[in-house]
Length: 448
Image (cartoon, rainbow, N blue to C red; front, side):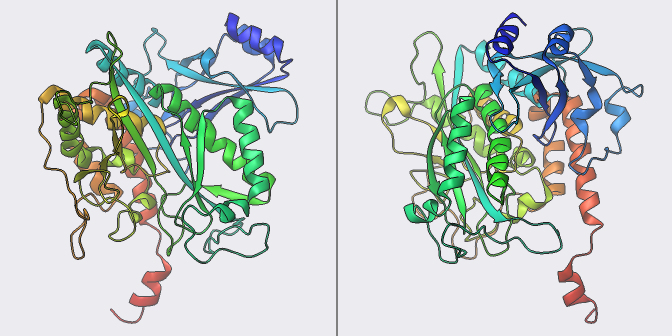
């Protein structure tokens, strides 16, 4: 709290946003005057906030997971996450909290706790994971009525994109004022953003983050999503991280590059020796990703909309093949010098909770290392030929059943958390399943 107090004083802060990520990866928390925040030393908040659905409802097994008395948990601010809120009208600070039970343990339902626990598993093995996320998103026209389809945002020219504009400089410049605001906000918050590119979809872009510590980068993605939404609204548009926001446009992903560093030597253990491109540890890690990705898919694709992205011929992985510099595979090893040898997990959607997606990817690799799982041979052709079936789950409900049947992931994440996650996501699925779509009315009303 001493570091927090210094930050608040040095920046003349008049309000504090005390936040934590919920199950969906959204920010929950409280607003405080600085003195009150320091006096409470983090304060308390109901633990039920961790297990609320995206619609604001509760799972059927809610009171099997949390105390029926609706107890509080203890918040502990992480001073490494202190940042200015650059879009606020008055000097405002934001901080992310770790959640603890009243007996001083990391709260088992907190997604930040889950990632911390996975990182501890690697630390016990003398290893430090390094990751680099790549986050895709769409800029869309303001959508006030959800009954209407989304449309790409209109840039400086006054025209809406129609053609594919991958890596187009001029297409990004269409949104130059918004992008300038975004970079100003990111710089003010110390976000380690790297390059910005235009992706395949209309008004779809991708931001890359510099590689680093998984928890810090999960925090940065968490903050970046809020930042981009604020920058877009300032310029009269929406930014969306939906996995598949528009029917005719590609989905949006959050690719996760990952490698492992030997803590004692500082060496990348994925790099091969004696003329070999990859080490045995690399192959075992990839083997774990291949074996456990089907069971972990609901962490990469956590919403009912997520599964619309997993379709053939739409630049999304549909099976667990891997390859060297092969962008058609779900697991890609980019061409890189030994020090940068890594595997890229291309399954997570942009709509994922970054803490849980990163934790799940690392957990799958960890299980591969411990079990010395051998991967398949690398794929050199297109990973999904025409007519190939989609091998990953096609619905959220199917993905949850696969997770429920995976004791290895349940042990790493904790039975209580997995039960809560499945309960929350099943509640979301059932809520969605009640909605009768226009497709059903158009094609079934008078024909069945």
